[in-house]
Amino acid sequence: MVSLEGLVAAAVVLTCLLAWRFWGGRLEAPGDRREEEEEGIPFITEDGSGCCRLLCKPSALAQHLVRSLGRSAALQRGRWLWPRWPQLQMLRQLLQLPHPEPSVSRELLQMPDTGLVALDWLVGPRKTRSCSSGGGPSSVLLLIPNAAGKVTGGLLQLGLRALEQGFIPVIFNRRGHNGCPLTTPRLQPFGDPGDLREAVTYLRCRHPSASLLAVSEGSGSGLLLAYLGESGSSSHLAAAACISPIFRGRDWFEAGMPWLYEWPLLLHLKRGLSRYMGSLAEVMDVDVLLSSRSLRELEEALFCRTKSHPTTWETYWERNEPLRDADEAAVPVLCLCSTDDPVRGPPVPSLPLELFRTSPYFFLLLTPWGGHCGFPQQGPRCCWGHEAVLEYFRAMGEFLRAEERRKGLARPRRVGGPIVEPPLFTWQRSYTR
Image 1 (cartoon, one colour):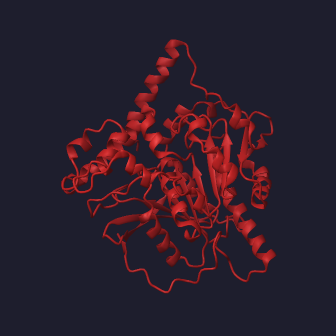
Image 2 (tube, rainbow, N blue to C red):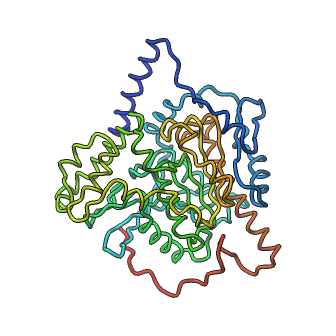
Image 3 (tube, rainbow, N blue to C red):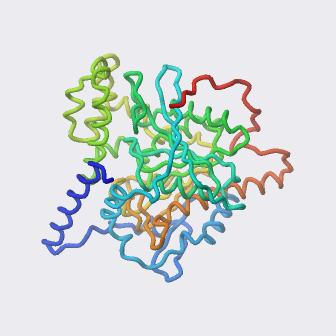
């Protein structure tokens, strides 16, 4: 069933396409990408029609990723017109759901302030491949939706594909998002990783012998990047990946977004928040909230213009920029980006290229065509980006096992930190609905 947000997006994009056709123009192509496309290690497709590049600091891990991704069929796609239309890719994501839709088992976790977040475990028939999943068949893969909490068809498709390969996929839902009850008049700011840290701690308690992996989609990457920076070597994650991440949150909100992306998300957020107007009225001006005409206005109404703790826009972003502590990150992170991403914006100001050049933990896989979280390909699996991310996790597990054998370690080691003993406490704040 097509959602109301999807219908709005369809109407907007069809209007734009008709206008472009009437004016005799073409769909917008990416701008000047010469610098980004020339830098990094190239992966050329079999017919020479496309090229991805890996930008990173030279290291043994980087060499291993180059070899693994170079062998991956995910990067060997051929010539196809569809990837050059990022606006249509975005429409496809909003309208299309995976077939069949996955079944989920929801678990509610209570936070220290009695707020709730939800974990949706993807369940169903599993065709586990014996030697494929990154880090082993028991790896837990945490899926983080965009900042609006909208679980897209693409994210569900990634979860299903991971399930087939032997991962244990689970979706993290913020307070008040995707049907998670809002029990306190407090939502999660853009880059506040407190609730995510609690969820990761719980997952490690529930699966103490499994590797923990995380992948985020779109603006949800701001939360994952902030968590990795704040946690450093104590993140409990073996590896992470970001699909079409937003690196500079404030610039992104201030620059504005395409209507096709902003309006559906704005409608999605307002519809979810309207259930809690009574309790939210105690801490914020709900009239300003509901009259917001952009995601920036909504973000300011939710987190800056509160009645109890008002703050400025500048101060808010000092505490919530995704890369504010990027130098402290100690977990390998693959960022899959496209230079024609209409949501992130032009590549030169929106991609922190110097971070990838200097940090041994950040890897940028950059492609000229892919849109925003699209990366389409021909065939039954519609997104080659998903295959690339899962191949990255497999390669990371392979590399870590080789390092353990080389160093003669007797048991698994968490990336970037010492061996951690199993927790001595029992999680007491889990409620299942």
